[in-house]
Amino acid sequence: MKIAVVEQDDLLSDLMSFRLELLGHEVFTWGSASEMLTEIGQTNIELLIIDTYQPDMQGWEAIQKVRQSRSEEVLPILAISIDTDLSLVEQAFKAGANDYLITPFDPAILQAKADSLLLGKHLQRH
Image 1 (cartoon, rainbow, N blue to C red):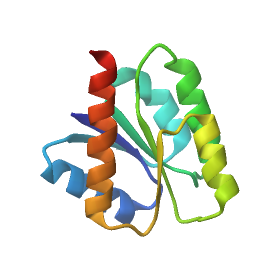
Image 2 (tube, helix red, strand yellow; image 1 turned 30 degrees about the vertical axis):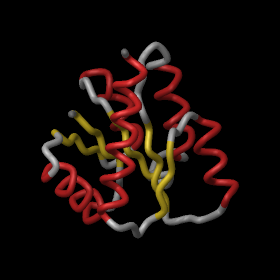
Image 3 (cartoon, helix red, strand yellow; image 1 turned 90 degrees about the vertical axis):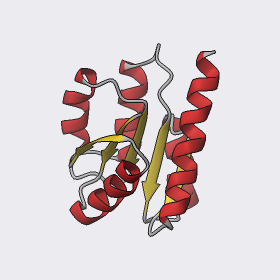
């Protein structure tokens, strides 16, 4: 499976990528939402993991733009954030996120959420 990670923190990006690659996934990483929005059309990803804090726009705005540009496609989106503010969580879901994960997190939880979203995507296709 091809998974994209949009995270400005290199350490967190590397940790998520490493865990997902250990599970056999191919991982693309982008350091900003604008970089992701420019290049996402050139990739055939099956899951998008995006931090709500981006250097160039709000994470929920980026989620909304992905949903608008790929409206015909079933693309699960996992929003991650260090912020536990419920209004931020709500904004991410309203923008189109399918799930939410608070950092720091146990890598097993990341794995479980990714597996669940990918399974749901494949069930929707069939």
